[in-house]
Length: 347
Image (cartoon, rainbow, N blue to C red):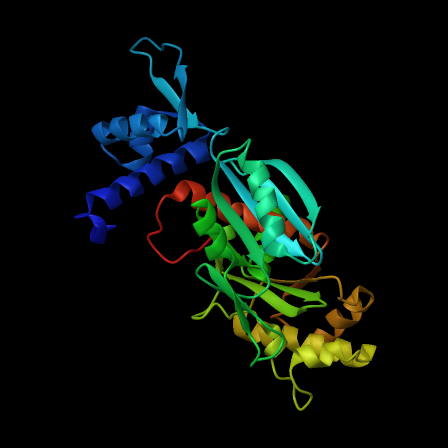
């Protein structure tokens, strides 16, 4: 924050973001409550509230009941005019959701892709939605390594191709695009959903690895101390390229229809490696090609490679589609009201 003190326009965005953050957390607040919770001066809060109302980012709920003194005006986020649109593509379908600033899903649909043309199908959905909704940010989940508005994807170490879907959509519609790796989004979404069930857990202290098995490959989303781990080149979690003894990469082994015994042993080895490197509390496994019938054998076999007092809880994912959408919508919604990032993108 100190490095930004000499940049008024930047500080204005930061302060606006803090105000919207408080309104998101509390649902509504008065000018005095916003000043108290943000540390921003009363004069600055008053000026920013006026601008945010003009820009339709917040609305006034009117005056509070009198408690003997002057009645205070109460403000809240404008849920109708600040919508995020989130996509993820799976096989021949595009799944999307419209979400308000509080993260509530307004609309959730699945659309078939036209002749494997992802861009054209995305554009049709966006064009249709923009007729009725004021979209402030678009979140897109992809299978590959994210690089700004682009991503790289491939099954071999030497045949990765570049795709510019995020950059293309952002330039065409002049709407910010949040592009995220599918496994990162699924790991984040699972964590958010799981934390709602397990109220004793805290996101800031969460250590989790989500391993996903599909026909496109095997990968992982990693959360360490509440933060998504992307790595220097956003390559973290590309488990398919892990070399397994003399058998080649994990991807090749799983694609060659290994016996159940080999499958159990290989997956157990990968879990043991992740446990040594990340030391997660939970390892979640799921996906369409996971041999779920072998889960108990995998758990038992892991004991051969893990210290008896440092064994993560292994959980089967129940609904990866739900987790995927939850992760993408969360990232898009967070971006929408953040205005500016002071650090690298994080959860």
